Image (cartoon, rainbow, N blue to C red; front, side, top):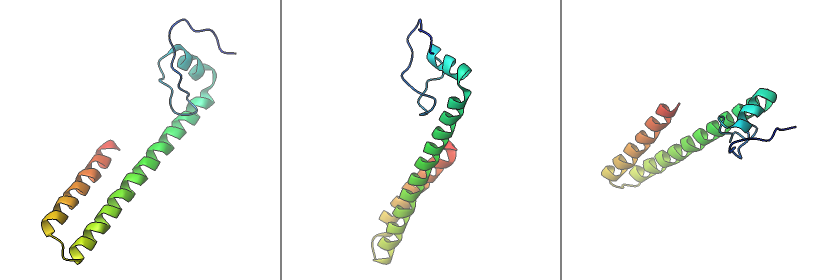
Length: 97
């Protein structure tokens, strides 16, 4: 049974990956239910991996469209701008990991 808390507590959950980790409730849950903490870490890692895959898919689609632009005779200057945007996105993903 959870104790009554003195101070304000978050409404997050380790299981869902939304716990703040600092309030009394999170400390109690971390100390009494370590399996929930591990589940939350796994959920957070899966969410990060999913977001990364989605970002990479967006970059790949954009690069494929850029290739089609060039094959269709569109401006290389516009294609270069699009490629630079994709390079910036890849750098951002690299820096986040």
